[in-house]
Length: 82
Image 1 (cartoon, rainbow, N blue to C red):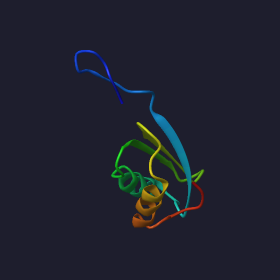
Image 2: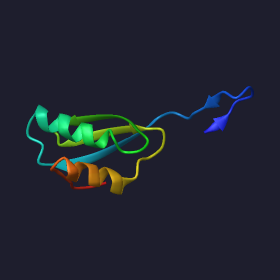
Image 3: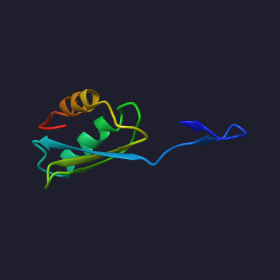
């Protein structure tokens, strides 16, 4: 993060990272995965889609893939890439 004169912070555009998750079959699954991944440090928002099996993670910088993988596993699912 860069500092602007006067103490205000400038931040670059958010980073979108996509992961493929196996096992999501309904909206409840989406909410469970999004809730766990949303707790990963630096993650600003998560969108999960059980139809495509994709989660889209928005953050200030690329999230730690291992932390995302662990969060998905905590929700009861598996990251198959990323």
